[in-house]
Amino acid sequence: MITSLPLSSSNDGFDDEALFARIADDLTHRGFSIQPNALPLAMADELLLDLHQTRDDEFQRAGIGRKDDYLTNDFVRTDTICWIRGESQAAQTWLNWTGRLQRYLNQRLFMGLFSFESHYAHYRPGDFYKRHMDAFRGEANRILTVVTYLNPDWHIDDGGEMVLYQSETDIEGIQVTPGFGTLAIFLSEEFPHEVRPAKRDRYSIAGWYRVNTSLNGRIDPPR
Ligand SMILES: O=C(O)CCC(=O)C(=O)O
Ligand SMILES: [Fe+2]
Image (tube, rainbow, N blue to C red; front, top):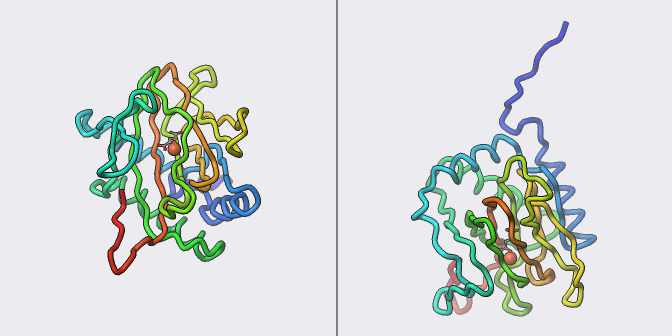
């Protein structure tokens, strides 16, 4: 007799601990981790729905730099973004999961990750983000970048790869296809990367763990 198991349990059979362990091992040995199709399916579905329910006018042109030196620059990047503030159930699920990953990495790798900020990003066909770094050494702000993709049935011919370069001088890089639930995690100060133009709309979440850079009791706020 076949006993059927519920197909849609809270994590769809994905074992977060095992995934977190693979990420920690990769970070230790290489400083980055690419995990195809790794996001728990129920959460990825929830996030995709949330993204589609987010109104177009909640997406703004993405900038470069922070706060006062925030500029939009068509030469560098042309995507639009919507910061995730935890207002929807899906956002809560995501922040809960990224919180668990944060605690895991802090316990195992002593990374001292303190806060997390993330946004949805929408790259229309042809949009791009030129080669860049997410943080600069010594500024001690963004420590670890987490990107996940929400594009069902993405085909390699659709383009839109994220290319992760292993050093300043690397011009070949590693190509990451932005398929549904793929996770790309890397040390923000170590890996230049870019987003190549796609033929279709390309959706993702980009997030950053930061260390506590409070000075003289002044807490440096996220963003
Ligand atoms: O969407 C991606 O693949 C990466 C996005 C990125 O590099 C960024 O937002 O800083
Ligand atoms: Fe980036």
